Length: 326
Image (cartoon, rainbow, N blue to C red; front, side):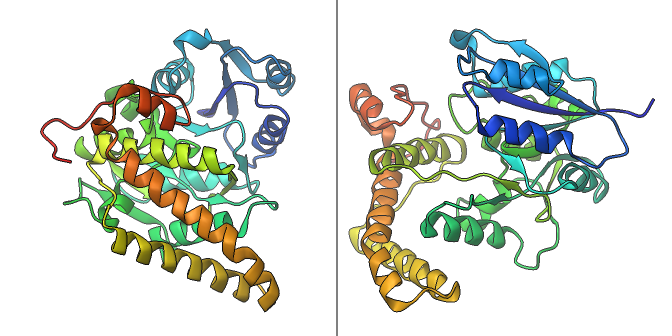
């Protein structure tokens, strides 16, 4: 029998998008069998039944014992496939070849431990989210060809961030590599930490621009600030990246982002009036992103109560890099 491929999904109250994700996994065209594993941590909305109806093997996890890294390690230990593709409950494979394209990344170089693909925005995503996703994933491979990274990059600049990026909302791992270099039990950005650890251990990482999932979020203002706070705190804790706090520099960053949003709409055929209507929302969006990044990357300086108040996940603890300055 051919070696199976495991698709593993942590779930908690994922319906109805979970149904789309499961159906898209089952529709994959692949010569190898697909094993579907779901770790459900206390769903009450029918997600458990949706997973079982889709033929998934369901592992029930006590919500008090769930962790992003630990639960994914458990899924990998339960897998029978030599490769494990991770999705989130709301990341829908965009084509029937999604899994085959991810797997093809392992043949591009010796010692590939990780392969990942991009996100496409949902049809109702805001222009800001559309543009941010398009720009970020295009920056990883402007040519549209697979990108291969090996070894830890120097510094913490933009190119280093790109070299270290990995996502377990749309990523595949060699199970043997993950057994040697597992996810860490970190509160956030477990996928970024895994990429750093894999590269440090000598594995290569591949980005496949043609292996997309449909996955995006539009947050309300308070949620957007909290999300950026958590993301930036994690980037500081994992990679040592600190968002600039200089107000002039941040104002220029925000100005550039707003300009890019309006240019994106113009390329999309929007009239001048529509672009002007977007201006306040775009400005608010990017100001909140900037404030969240500044505060989050300096979370270690804040008292626990304030860290909890700022965090979308209400996380009070902080794990600053040893010996890092602020």
